[in-house]
Image (tube, rainbow, N blue to C red):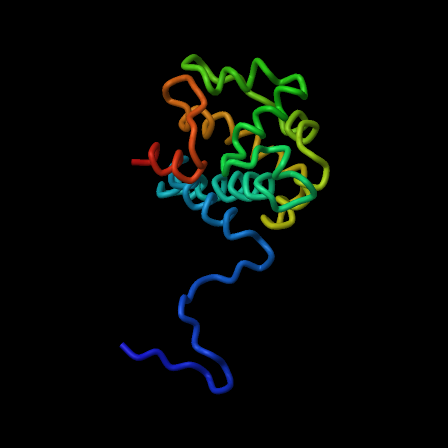
Amino acid sequence: MVRVSKPGTTPSARPGPSSKGSTMAGNDLGSLLGGLLGGSGGSGGGQGAGNILGSLLGALMGGGSGGGAQAGGNGNPLGGLLDMLTKSGLADQAQSWIGTGDNQPVSGAQVKEALPGDTLEKVAQQAGISPEEAADQIARTLPQAVDRLTPSGQMPSGSLEDIIKAQAL
């Protein structure tokens, strides 16, 4: 197969969607999380939720003002995110997602309070929604994502990408 480019353009060695300002880490995490959350289902709702969580975790991994340091520098921002929630008074909820019992819910307002101010703005902008809607989506999907990523009731070690791939098998 021969690929023909428009005159005046250079052929791309790796065709694909442009990042449009979002981090590749966020896009990759979004795809992986979408699959983990059931993004291949009929409604595709898991994929959208995965993209929001992927953008959030990508932003915490280093896409913002010191967020990477807050979220842990080992390629796994999930622990840092759970620390933020714990420090915001949501320790019981966060622990319930990691543990093997029922997952306690959180509200969008609680998520918004727990996150650094510019992080939620950035995630919402990437998703093309309001910060309030982004917080609501995170509140709906984060408990399920953490629950699936911690099936043994403990926070796994390693990079977040490796952890997601291991659980999605």
